[in-house]
Length: 366
Image (cartoon, rainbow, N blue to C red; front, side, top):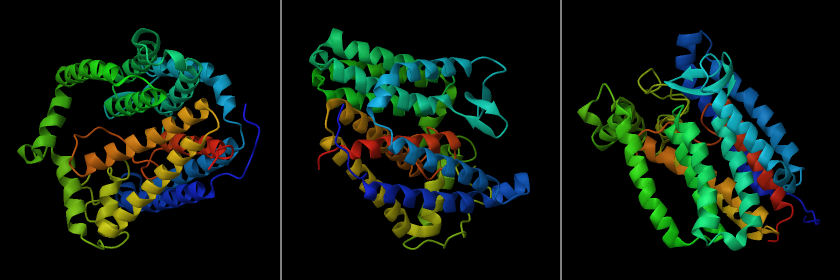
């Protein structure tokens, strides 16, 4: 266990808090109209997001002072608990169904999404597993298959909800970690072909997924149905121009773009703050990812390096998918934009994961 201790990465803290602040402002701006109409309270979503932001920031600073090797000891237990919770959400009467997916546990508006925390638990476990069995990583049967079997078990449980977006982020993050640990490229090619076939099967097996693909290719073929959300998102991004309409001046949030405070909040940012505001947000994410990669490269051991790669990979994949969906480059997947979108489980997980990354930075050699 590394002993030396230094100050955490203050630039990473600053970037995280700036993104969080922008998120709080934009959640209020994007949701005020819908919240007033549905709950007679313009601050309904903003107050809840602020509550989870406070909890998340406290958790981030608390976790920042916990040695990252602690998660190595508790990785198995945490993953087992997450698997049990993933099973629990599938039990009728226990899991809460929202948007056609049984992905939540809780009461009323305050609930948790176990699949979000499964991502972090699996990152911690894979970091431990791969660092302890590094000599087997290049082996298909002793390294790659055991790792991927666990990943696809989690993916399968998440797909039963179903939640293809979260499952895609989880698989993408874990594959990145396994590749970084030293797995052979040819093995990934073989598994990739199988994965593509499996993904195609998942799409074909569910009619709504086929509609999402067709609406992605030509959203105007069904402008009031499957293509509605993408079209309304583009109507928000396009007119925003260079400087945008101004903070709070979005037109699409007037019940044109469904629930704009969640997955499509970047469209409202583009509409209100324009190209410059949207670019500033993307630059903040780039800065955050750069600091994360730097921490991973400077980590004192393989476990810390893989843990940092998993965290920063999870954030990077989620950002790329969300932006791609909002701009019409990918089909709608239901992925939140880290630190910005409304959602307690997602926000809390992201801030806790940054806390782990900050602790690794205290031992990293720059």
